[in-house]
Length: 544
Figure (cartoon, rainbow, N blue to C red):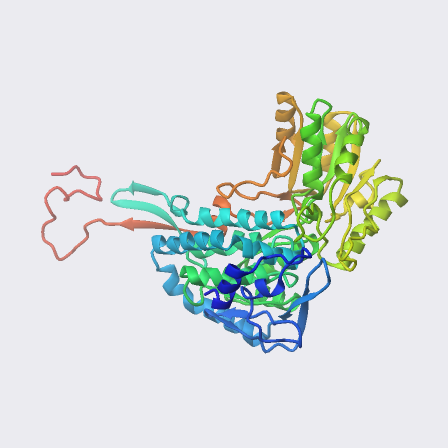
């Protein structure tokens, strides 16, 4: 339950102070209590069997504010004993929870969505504090997760099985979907509220129990959501939270009681998790990296297209797996260059908590350096730097991980800046002579997460959506993330597994089909005479 101190602070204090910084004390009341792992920063707690507990870890990870490098909290490397206790709590909670009626489980989600709405500002403030994105982006982070909770409130229609009577004389067959047992989720840093909400609400509503590992870079939102889930009525042990890095991931992948693992993150981590988890007999879904292309035809609406490209490439500092990071201009970039540069230059770089900020910091200094190095590699390989965001300084936040919007033109598919997912506010621009060539460029990339076409031509749009080998396609929509009654359907190198996240596919991932065949023929040998009208049931004889 949310602490009384937190509620009091929420009523009496602003999320922001006069310098545009997040009020740290305001947010901490939602996460771990202020017992200290160091002299200055509170520890992040574990959630085991309905209790927030202090870890006995000997190794800790700093959680820092990317706009300031301030240590916000200290995260434990969960011990083996603590991890096993979390899984055991989930295992013991499963039998009762799976037999809890679906309407009762759904009512927990109804209450959870109400609590998330009520605490939207506090959740968004924590996302900005730990992840760095602007407050409007952070609210969007929470809201897109909330939409999945709303979907989880009404799963009954998608859980319905099939029934055929009289498949043979006196025999009926039907199918049902049943929960797997203990399942787990491994979350990335870029959407610390949304991704946990992609995972545990659906998994728990269909009857599973859950072990969640938030990102070690920004765990606060997940802890707050867990607190709200308990307040909503989720029973002890149904949701458990462990923390850590590589060692905790391996424990999730190796533990025999964990039946399925859901993951969102990088290519390297995703391939590792899919291979190791699958080798251990687990069901795994791994949403991985992306290189999302926008294809711009000459007939596209100039103002709307430039606005869409700018928001999709530089919003959230480019740290989203559906960001547009490559633009293919059919007929050349020249007609678009000046307007695109004007829009990009007008964006304000600064701390996410400050009013008017368009582009916040990257998550770590290493992420900033990697993006800057990929920009340089583009220059070294012959691209032209139209706008250089390296070296940007934000007064009062000189230690922040800031990289300004950057534009590279003349990019070729063999360049490192194109082949790698930069994960920063960088748009690489390619050119094609025809739509066929543009589609070939998109299909030639190893990733297949999202893509968009900008055009006024219906036939061109139909050709593109039919021929492009990408799982989520937008027509004049820059970031075509489906609403939760569909599924998040990345293709090719962007996804490993056979059942995608949320929607019907997500529900199927967290359940398994069981087919039952019944035989109610009258075979009672103790009866000398069968009931009238049933004497021929189950035989080939005509009824008497």
